[in-house]
Length: 176
Image 1 (cartoon, rainbow, N blue to C red):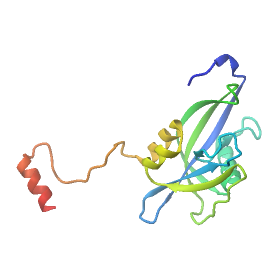
Image 2 (image 1 turned 45 degrees about the vertical axis):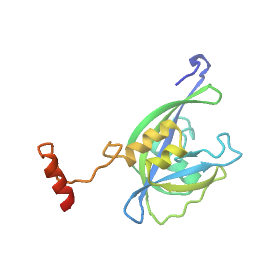
Image 3 (image 1 turned 135 degrees about the horizontal axis):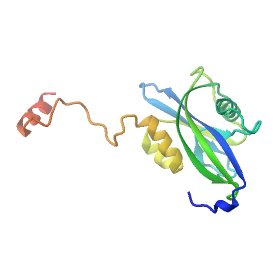
Image 4 (image 1 turned 120 degrees about the horizontal axis):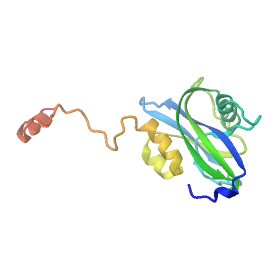
């Protein structure tokens, strides 16, 4: 985080929701919302989030539920804290800490109703989509949800062990 720390005059907590649901093929989907074209981060994709300032010092989970309801009309259930990250805003005068929660919808049949701050939404399922759409800090958070086994590539179980010889490996994969 590059910043002139002397300019920071305000510190703010932010609550963010990584909202998941199951897709048609039982895959994990994550909600992203797109900022409006006339917003200060125009057309940027993000997960729902907002400042915990109503009132200042607002409880994180209360803030989380309020912001998600305001931004996309959903009632959510926070499951667990995924991680946190800091960022500088307001022309370098505010340092914010984003508390990122894994959440699910109270009812998966709820309809998304975006606020005037956002123009679009989409449910994503792959890190490829994440790489193309969101900023680095949010990529790290989402990867902890989508890439739960920590591998870049997932390999099928083929019963091959380090004790097998190459010939045995070829026989195993030909017979599967």
